[in-house]
Image 1 (cartoon, helix red, strand yellow):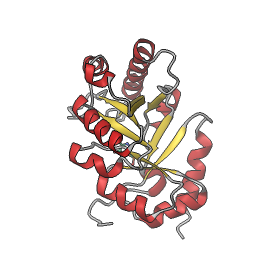
Image 2 (tube, helix red, strand yellow):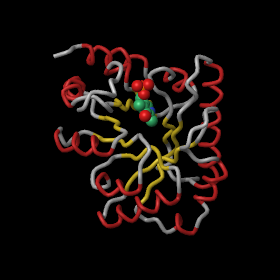
Image 3 (spheres, protein in one colour):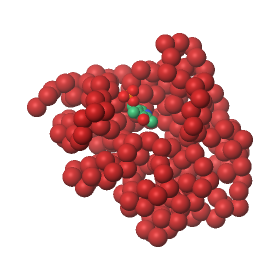
Length: 228
Ligand SMILES: *Cc1c(COP(=O)(O)O)cnc(C)c1O
């Protein structure tokens, strides 16, 4: 067994305050790596490809909490709805409608985060503040009994400029507070601020992260060419 993973989890764990949940991002890594992390005690894993998420769910112990952290296509929703613990990247009303339809068929309330576009980079994914307001005020959203919006998620610009990263996280924290006050007052379910990856999670924690999504600092660099 490669002790590296346990050591990394141990080191990272020491830097996280009690209220911050560690999502071990195991995308593009084989089940053996997840098993080592599991034996160390890690129970929360994140994947970004639906097919891998489903096959790993099937292969591994059932007390694992699986988070879908990547962009989700509507035609892939059905296969994860029965077991997924949290969908991090909801970025349209249309996607939320499909999740709701599948969730109601499965008879299961599915927790979701709204993904915001906070980076300077031109990324395709993520809501603007205005789009989120429109979504939350829509008649369709008002009827979704099988969706629980648990908070927000964002990815900062990939830059060595820590000040910029901090500003982007701070902006998302502001959006989080605004939405909480306006749409989720008195609703304890809306509580998650999913920010922070291997390169920037310490800044994210300082800016109020409740969930960090860490991959390469736990499992090593990813080799996208390797088939798992
Ligand atoms: C891959 C990924 C991560 C983890 O990235 P690392 O830099 O390896 O920690 C976190 N969040 C999302 C959305 C990802 O796709």
